[in-house]
Length: 362
Ligand SMILES: Nc1ncnc2c1ncn2[C@@H]1O[C@H](COP(=O)(O)OP(=O)(O)O)[C@@H](O)[C@H]1O
Ligand SMILES: [Mg+2]
Image 1 (cartoon, rainbow, N blue to C red):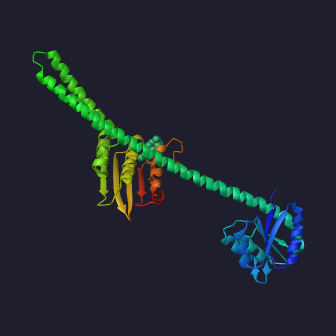
Image 2: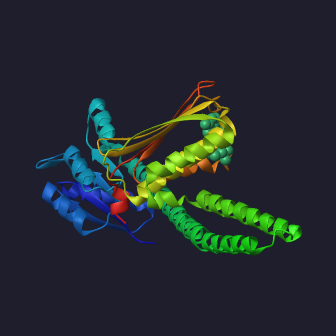
Image 3: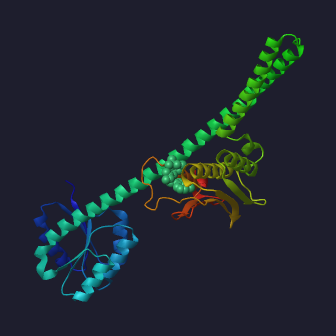
């Protein structure tokens, strides 16, 4: 096992020896250095790694309080034990509040070994806790990156498939339709059977075209790319209103707010997810969608007049809609707010800052 590395803040060589003799009880090899000024302590902390600090209370040119500040300023969470002649209870309490870990009287040095053993264990626990917390933060960040990546990839894939459906399949079907119309125009009136067949084919091609367009639009409305978020949201609301018989109002005051593609897509997907929820859960008669900006922040909100969220909060795990909205917002360094009360409807508001640390940091 490595030697225990002790930094002694002590002006008296004799006292230092007494302390070190006491530590033989720990049964460990000890590596120590004695310092008695602030500069020397700083240097020792910068030069080597220490396991703990044992400090005298009053030194001619230094003190335990000052030594503790130096240690804290160095950002090192080491056990700090004060060994001193008499110090009053109040002073001791003050030092403990400031962050000293223990206090041992010079005439009761026998206690020191046990105090050190305990503080080392605690320091180790604190270290493990810090590590676990850091790991948790790291894994949270990786999860956020993965979510963003998945959302982006999915969006790109949808855009590509929607384009191909719309353009390729759409064009082929249109060509086919023209051929059928041509065929029909060349069919003699007397051929009732042929006539009916070509009419039915033309109708089927029309229906297929409609289906292709609507599947493509569901994947990703082409107008989001071609005409912008306003047209896309209007289309979404119109379609939603027709499908579910829910009235809507759209307030959009984006003026010439510079909305980039990622934010436009995020805003659109937020509205889409909220409307899906209104249709599925809210039993609402009316929705209001507001898109505006303030202080450079884009705000997107969807309010319904339905039954409201369950007060207890639905804690089932596979509720990915709201979670997805929250993650989207977090990606831009923004936030999601939910305001809801039973039978008083639900308001979901998402704020997206114009520039985010996460994005620019990538
Ligand atoms: N507008 C709303 N009105 C009432 N309840 C809602 C509304 N939006 C969401 N909820 C509730 O919140 C839950 C979580 O929503 P969400 O995360 O989108 O998951 P999902 O829609 O798949 O259930 C829903 O199951 C529903 O109970
Ligand atoms: Mg949902």
